[in-house]
Image (cartoon, rainbow, N blue to C red; front, side):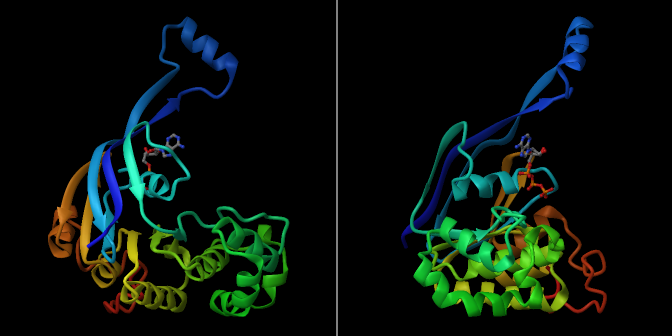
Length: 260
Ligand SMILES: Nc1ncnc2c1ncn2[C@@H]1O[C@H](COP(=O)(O)OP(=O)(O)OP(=O)(O)O)[C@@H](O)[C@H]1O
């Protein structure tokens, strides 16, 4: 099988600034207090993803999952190591990312699709289908700046799934969608898998990882903690498999689409 993503000894360092103004910094420095600190959000992470694999990226808040996705997408560069990807990448990492708040949803479809490398003709061809999937009614022609976070996610996801990509990245932004929409997204993610495309899916939800993924990678404070079978990975993160209440799946079923 061909390698889709090669992550080799990757690290990413961020700076924590303890003070916001020059004055605060000067006072802190004069008192001998620390003004800033550096920390590793990703620390020597290595693994390989084969084409067609569906990786569930799990781990506690702040463990580095979104940072890793951003590096894979190429919107950030690693400070150490290398990331190689094969093929076109699409996906939804942050709701509303790349949207212009003063443009309408319809106008933003063209803008966002262009960022993903879609031509105007391709976008026009897919426009009705994108609008149909987003299903936000007349508000498709109002300013995106007034959209709710769920509407942002709907539009962003609708555009991303219409890009003919080889690698699909999905952060837990789907969590802001309502239950019918989450179900629709999970069905689409299943289609992506059936087509043999590579999936990189960040989630805290056991149900959706079980349904969507065939391998789990767990990050722990920026380091690779686990890489292997889905059930073993879920056990490793020690998420209670009966997590439906916390996840808002009030009927308690584990139909997975609802359990994102
Ligand atoms: N641009 C940035 N500048 C400084 N620190 C950052 C930046 N981006 C992320 N971080 C920090 O890096 C760490 C990892 O963040 P990241 O968003 O990758 O975690 P995560 O595993 O996706 O968390 P969550 O489950 O909460 O979404 C956190 O401590 C976060 O505050």
